[in-house]
Image 1 (cartoon, rainbow, N blue to C red):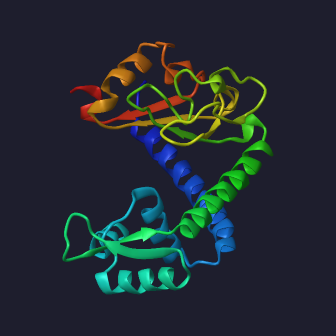
Image 2 (tube, one colour; image 1 turned 180 degrees about the vertical axis):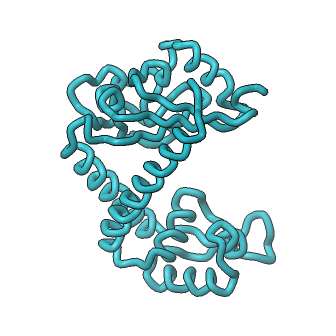
Image 3 (cartoon, rainbow, N blue to C red; image 1 turned 135 degrees about the vertical axis):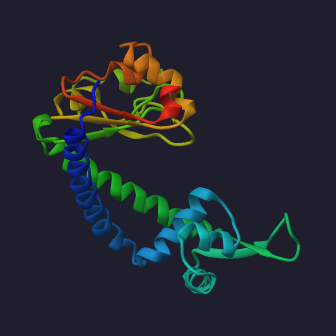
Amino acid sequence: MSTPASDVRAAADRLHSAAIHLLRTARRVDDETGLTAARLSALSVLVFGGPTTVGRLARAEQVSAPTMSRLVRALERDGLAARAANAEDARSVVVRATSEGRRLLHAGRERRISELAGVLESLSPEEIDLVHLGIGPDGHTASLVPGDYVLEERDLRVAMTDREYEGHRRMTLTYPALAGARRILWLVLGEKTREPLAKLLAGDTSIPAGRVDNENQLLIADRDAMGA
């Protein structure tokens, strides 16, 4: 798979446009939570990353510690976060998401997924201009994971995995949707992807990524992934 500079730039331009549209859709759905984007983002770190200090939370969100302190106080007032003793350092405290915070965040995530799935289902496969894919160490791509029944789905373009993967059932584009897209852009990074990348390039269908069938594919990989 060659990567001429003009192709890379064209793919990057399409990916940028797609990302902007996705962010707009997500922002519209996120408004239903009643939280500002900053509070929702901080809560997301707590829910999916676990309890942490205000300082670490500020660094993760790339804001100052005083700004994060104000955000945390607002989340506490809403009953979405709480402070607790730090088991690693008795001199400090950590912030954790409450059960209500987790419920709100997961409900928002489901709304996002449903909204995006509705958009995708309303399109014909040919209308999906660009699909950006990566590869996991186990050879999965999108949420097409090894051993799951979703790999055999032929009627739906968007489907749920049959079982949990890393703690969650996943929604994914299916092989028919990927086959109908105008272009597939693979972005493969890191040493852990070296083995599955070699299988992908060899056309090995024993991994989910190797079963993607599309005539117009562009692959970008770093040196670690290529073993160079």
